[in-house]
Image (cartoon, rainbow, N blue to C red; front, top):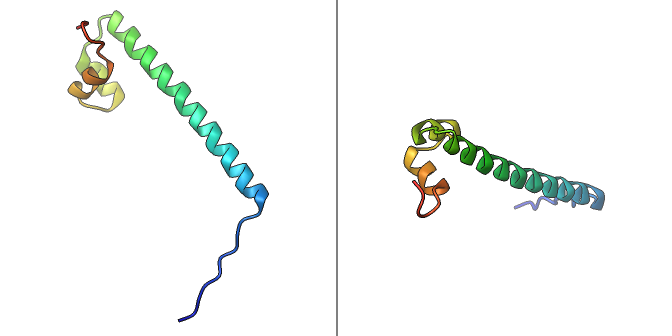
Length: 73
């Protein structure tokens, strides 16, 4: 059986990829905060869970479980 040798990417490529990963994680965290804020705003405006769930792409139950603070409807 012949062994296939793989080349290591140059250090700059790894560095650039790691930097891109860090940026994507930061964007994901910012998006999470923005979504949380928007769900809270929609609830204050009187939006119903089925409507919010549709916007989130999840079930009504999943939306309620994630975004309902204990002791609040």
